[in-house]
Length: 388
Ligand SMILES: [Zn+2]
Image (cartoon, rainbow, N blue to C red; front, side):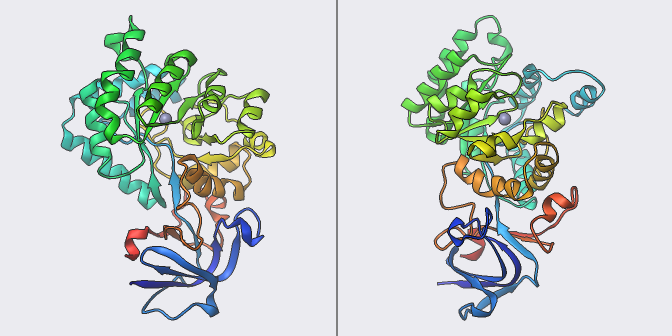
């Protein structure tokens, strides 16, 4: 059995509520003992058990690896010119997705996988140790199936998003496309997808269509999540709660009824500050969600159209500055919140028995993640596999 001690931790964010040390369960002058990739002991640096190997972090901060519960990494091409035009005054519409669909269909398997791996590397270097990824830029049975086949080689958190947008060849018969998404396409992806998702919004799918799609996915053993209320106030958040979605994502728009529904549910609200930033949209006020007891996650939404960032520290900084998270809330949402949005209880905290997914942060406290925006403070990122 391999044991590794991480010692001389100036500030350790455990996210362990039972310690009674605030939202983040912060310990100072701490150490961790890792056995076979799992956390085996957490305590004060002076009391760490003897081990063969140790890592001295020289007083820096250690926190759980970030959990990115919403990303779109299976695509080809980019849309830099569309972003530039938007910043010059054009507005964002869901239909821009079709540009990426054309590029993705034209790409080879190798090109798709290479681009995916490049982005996965970026996520890792921003401190992300678990990420979810979606299909949704193929929109044919063959292209959705290959996206999920490739993605499932690299992450267990794969999401079937055949219902990203109605492709142009179905523009005048959207119901036929819903039938494809819930029929033949679903059959071909079911083995390589854990989740099913739908973009329920203006210009994408209606609440009724979304309900039909998520129901079909659940019947095939996929678990539901949803893109809801990004572009306008609608019924997507209510539907998320009704369908017991693990998460309602975006929530740029919500009202008191939506807050009540989320607060009494097992559905996380996942906010995606990169999307408001990159589409110059108004930010939702996360304080209202936190005050009502809603569980909130932060994710990158990394995609070539509306949020081409792979940086969780960037999302934390924007969430604090523009969505009114406290710094502690933003850090919790990027770690434990993301784990809840993926219904995982083995990640997102540093507690005995959990995966040793860690960030060694080059700062005296995790508060610096928001306090020093745009500065790369990630000294090193470790996953459980690094300790086996
Ligand atoms: Zn998305």
